[in-house]
Image (tube, rainbow over all chains, first blue to last red; front, side, top):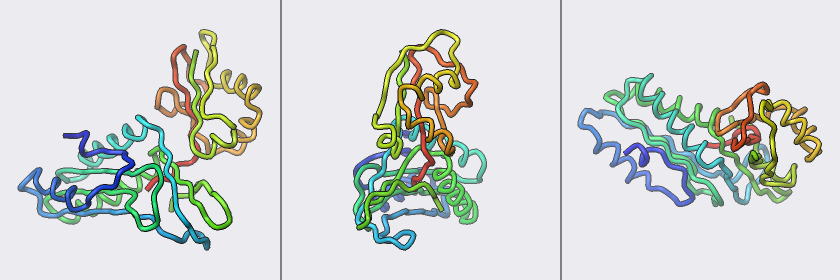
Length: 142
Length: 82
């Protein structure tokens, strides 16, 4: 079950299907918050044609699992799913999905916000953007 | 023999995705880095610039960490997921 909740994959995911899975895991859930990160076509004043995500296989999954475990321990929530795509990503495509199910919305919002911040901080995933001027490996993560 | 891996921008800066080398018993990460810098000169600049974390067997460690035969060392530039 946990393996399904934490995934690093090249293929796209369905936000609806993943939300339904969270909803189905407990009847106590009264609020679900989704964070969906998508590929935008503009960054730091530059047009982006497409992007590529590299990752450290094994370590990236381990970090995401730790984030999920900490969120379940530190927030009053019921379940968390974290999925990150890697490889070539076209503009407008899905990149990352975090879904948090809780009894109440405030806990779900707080936990979801913490999860995406923590993902950016500790997960060995890297983004390369292709712009009309060339290729740039992104080092900042606002 | 240990395996050293480079990710993202470091692959192109170093010019390699991974290298393998022998280590003596009792070697620390700091000692391994000195050896690596001789074989891969761009590493010196990369490490001086800062911001690169180093992991041993997928755990981020400091320079005093012991290195053992069979370990996997990885150079991790600043993360940019999400």
